[in-house]
Structures are given as structure tokens and as C-alpha cells.
Amino acid sequence: MNKLLATLIAGLFATSVFAATAAPAAPAAAAPAAVTAPAVKADAKETKVDAKADAKEQKADTTANAKVADAKADATATKAKAHHKAVKTKAKAKASAAEAKEDAKEAAPK
Image (tube, helix red, strand yellow):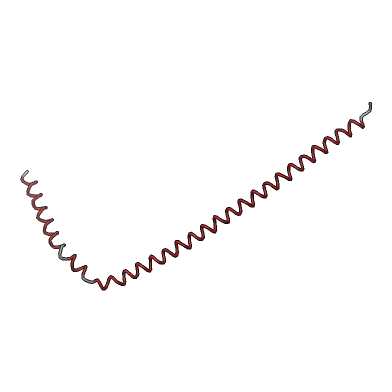
């Protein structure tokens, strides 16, 4: 138990020593404010480039969506045209079959 307490107290002192030495280092880092101005400009420029890239990507997505919609419309029109043609051919075939059946009845001996 004594060793445990001794270890905890030593850890407390060690932590306080490290905390005390780290505190003066922070104000020294804040001193070069003039150096951070170019960094702010660089960040602003990077943000601007990112915004342009996002706009370009969104424009490309919009164009792609328009092309997909156009392709779907074309496919629908083609499908409707094919369906109409199939119905027309089927009607012709039925009429032709009915005509052939009628001709066969007339030609059959009575």
C-alpha cells in the first residue's frame, strides 16, 4: 500500500512539473502573428480552389443527370414505337390468318 501511495504521489509531482514547463512554451508560439498571415492567405486560396472544384463537380453531375434523363426519354420513345409496330404486325397477322381461314372455307368442297 505504501508503494502504491508513493507511486501516485510521484506521478502527481511529475505531472505538475511537465505542466509547468509546457505552459511558457504556448505564449512563445503565439508571438509570430506576422508569420500566420501568409498561412491565412494560403488557407483562403485553398478554400477558393476547393469551392471551384466542388462547383465543377456539381456541374458535371448535373450534365450527367441530364444525359441520363435524355437517354431514358429516348429509350421510352423507342420502346413505345416498337410496341406500336408489334401491335400493328400482330393485327396484320390476325387479319391475314382470318382471311386465309375464310379462303380455305370457300375453297373447301361442299
